[in-house]
Image (cartoon, rainbow, N blue to C red; front, side, top):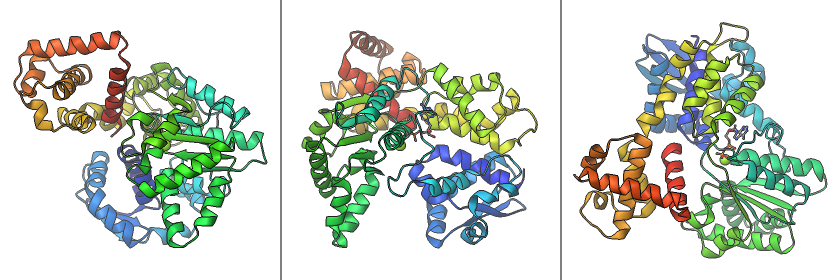
Length: 458
Ligand code: ADP
Ligand code: MG
């Protein structure tokens, strides 16, 4: 493997392990500048990146490189990637890399060149390349209808669901489609994080008036990851007024979030009730057939030659994140040259080993306990205690159910891990939760959905 290939494969894998924002911020414009005697030098654009990578991502990077190139002993960082990259436009760099596709970091910078300055929309996201299955058909149908008649029926439009399930894609596709159909309307897409940062900057620079002008005069405002404004009271206040101005003028507001409005913590009640007053739809986990179709489509786009057998293998193992599905293709693409050796099932298994095995490894008892304790706002030690109050016993039963269902722990093992309980208690809890779900206990179903999403996406 050349150093370019090694870094490309490393990036493809790191991308799956951290948030998109982190990935873009810290790994764009990086490359391996040299590799000698087990020591890898990564070149980064500036000192700030260098410090972050050294302090926060060193272990992850080393572990990932080692997984791909076991002789690696250490990784160090130097400043200088920017110079290397700016020598040639990023997308021209592909010729240096023998494997067919530009590296992930190149794709990112290339994409950024394509983003529409006025709307901030990325043209690569369209309805045409958005694959539909039972997990997203409602969201998709509502989006199509909004594309026809913005501001009319579904306002606000609130899409929620876990990480990597296509919320950003759907929002952007809707924005792009609106722009095509109604060329003269003012559309703005931005993340809630950017809204927050721009608002803070506007306060500091005393440019609030023009800040407000931009957003309150939109015909369509799309804000991605609205959960980000939790805890940020002044931003919420600002957003509330922006929202009302738009809403009262029949302008379309489109929002995405990682959870339904009711489950948003530290967001004002009046905002939540505004959100709930519109069209709420969720995007869930894609079913098997949809995963296969996504893989086939993306493999074609990326020109990765891949057999049905390999596709079925990946689709069978990666179930909870569409970005991860795509990530596996990036990894395979990093290893195989266009027209090169076939990607056999054995090779695919070898290269995707750490990723495919990851859910088992990552979803642990510890993680489930932590996520559930956070969600129900109780202490982990209470779960293990003999406390029988409902606010403790209910989470405990849910955890038992999750351990059984997701980790396939035996009943006695669950009992012993949760404070030495008898296995009959565990069976009772699992049966109870199953029965409640059968009886369509919506609140419980939503709790479990949320917990599973957290468990698989963090
Ligand atoms: P989210 O915003 O929910 O975290 P994204 O919209 O960023 O997820 O999706 C992650 C990746 O998966 C993107 O590259 C996106 O294009 C792709 N993707 C998600 N859903 C679909 C879909 N239904 N069809 C095709 N690609 C999808
Ligand atoms: Mg997103």
